[in-house]
Image (cartoon, rainbow, N blue to C red; front, side, top):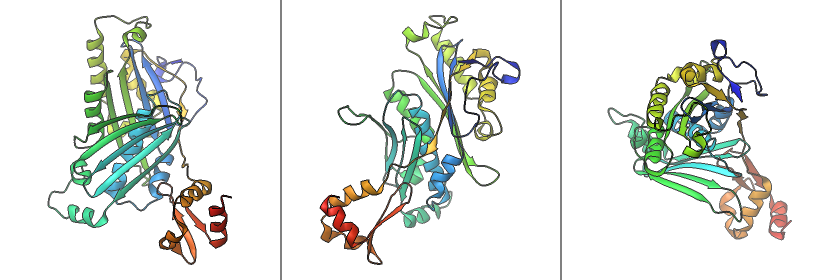
Length: 323
């Protein structure tokens, strides 16, 4: 763990092998407040996922939020598997979904109705908020750790102007530990998608008591003070890759004695494969595949990464023979 009390917010020693300040999760602790947090910065990984599809700007922005918040929420959990964040509604955007594996692979996808979206955008005073894009619906969190384990899922009604507000509503309704989050997505000077978020959470009393400066009875005061500091972060600070993550944390929380743990990398990573597509095809009667044929081949595209897998008749013979 690294102390950030050095000059200009730079660590006294750098024990972190990752030097990039994009596509990372930076865990940290606020020793004075006995709070834990995560700073997430997304850059090339986010842009690569979004540009695999020709999303309209409002849909791309909503999916960017979904991916960023999925990465941020997943970073606060201990799991071995897949964390999924999904929105679903009755608006022009049917759903957005993003998932993060425990080793840092990210992917995301949005489904939308272009005609409904165009009609919605034609309304006077249109604003690309949750209500206009998703309509009425829900936000779901799922942790899947594979076979022989129980899946965890939390669902809450979509509320608020943006996805961050919906997540905060979930925390208020469903979580035992107080949580706060500030996030932003946008484009950099080169037109590339970027995102940044900072999340704070309280610790259980038995863990908080391990801090030397912890003062039982002041937890609410500590939480309120740290929350005020968190709310001072500007969107530009969250999105600026030239501003080192540790410098931003020190700028925000230097009065709280911040310390950072080793950071983790995030990367685009889809789990589709020709083998998985073959397995899916075997679940369909071969005579029903004609609708998927193009130029004599059955073609299947992954919704997430847009990779297309083509199967000619010889390939299908092997698929249905179980090879």
